[in-house]
Length: 95
Image (cartoon, rainbow, N blue to C red; front, side):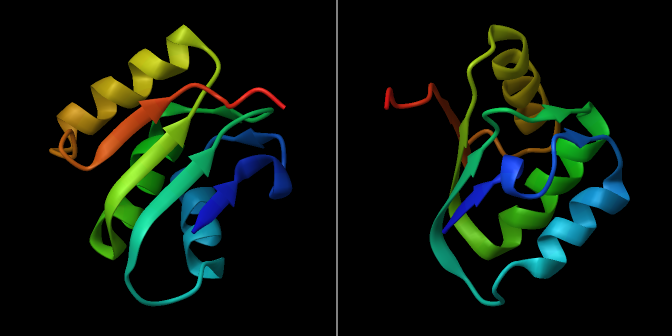
């Protein structure tokens, strides 16, 4: 399953917004979720809620990011949330 945040807006700041996106996803377990953050601005609270909400539904979360700052944020949050074995960061694939 792939979640392209830019399809849902441009700026993501609250846990409630993460819950809205999570609620719109298909129910059930999936082997891998790819979160494409290209073109999206996120806050730590939004991202923490999104990762926490996805983790029970998948064994692997791949977060596609361009920025070194966001890469560090994702890695820091995944460690803090105990998801470092589940979450992986990748750069975007060139078009």
